[in-house]
Image 1 (tube, rainbow, N blue to C red):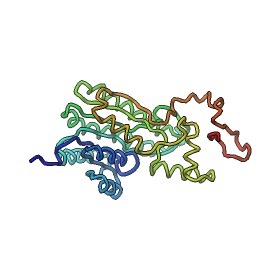
Image 2: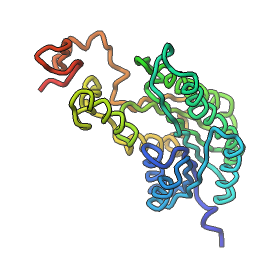
Image 3: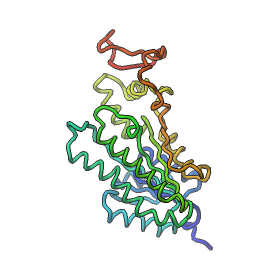
Length: 285
């Protein structure tokens, strides 16, 4: 009888202990995939593993030696590797003028170099299946510049091009490599950002989310599950001819022509201090 741990398609999700990574683990497990998750927080990983049945592995993807051990452990457990989700990432706000060098280097180490190390180590196993798939979780920050986000945006833009390069180099060997670029998504990390953002403005977390998505045509943030659903589709055979794509999952935010926003009667643009209200924008009604 075949070992049940070596049957079925298998995927590794980096940064799988929370947020989008945990949602991907839930979605893939529900779809019959064997899933491994990795990250730096063992307790968070274990909680997701208990919930989903995933194999949890502690790994700092910025460390090449740990990455090699990670891939060996996944292949030893499952016998193969069909899918890879490059989701691990960190953020340090700051523009080029004021971002500390060590913060920039830390983001490069995890968001870009770490993803490179994992992809490089996983690649022979993905190619061996003749239908391996990689999905990188980038950001709308890779597509549109925002104030005080220069370092983060640069690393996510690099991840996007790294992924497209994998597609171009290895599509003839059966590999597909695609990118999702989420906008504001309700996760533990985003909740913390909204708490800090809202505290400065006297807003609850839910109201802070409404404010930062006021110009998003869908007028709300995504759930982690909505992003995970796109990732799961890209890993599946249903997306068999989707390769090198960069897909915003952002409620149409990057499609907005910001120069026309003042003409949108559904949005109020407030001047600073006007009517005692908060600075910025809000949905009408």
